[in-house]
Length: 91
Image (cartoon, rainbow, N blue to C red; front, side, top):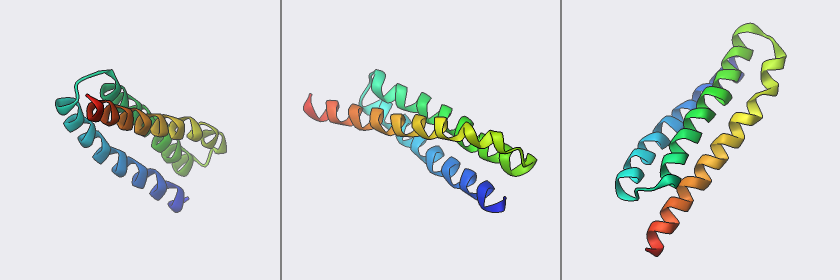
C-alpha cells in the first residue's frame, strides 16, 4: 500500500507543477483551453491521487475503480494545454 500512496503523491506533485505551467499559459495565451487545462488538472489531482490515498489508507479496493477517471482528466488537461499552445503559435 505504500507504493500506491507514493504513486498518488508523485502524480499530485507533477500536476501541481503543471498547474504552475497553466498559470503561466493563462497569462500568455488567454482563452478557454488553458483555463480548462487547469480545471482538469485539479479534478485529476482530487480524483486520481485522492482515490489512491483512500485506497492506501483504508484498504477498500473499490476506491481503485475511480482512479482511471482522474487519469482521463489528467490526459484531457495535457491535451487542452497543448491545444492552447498550438493555437497561440498559429495566431
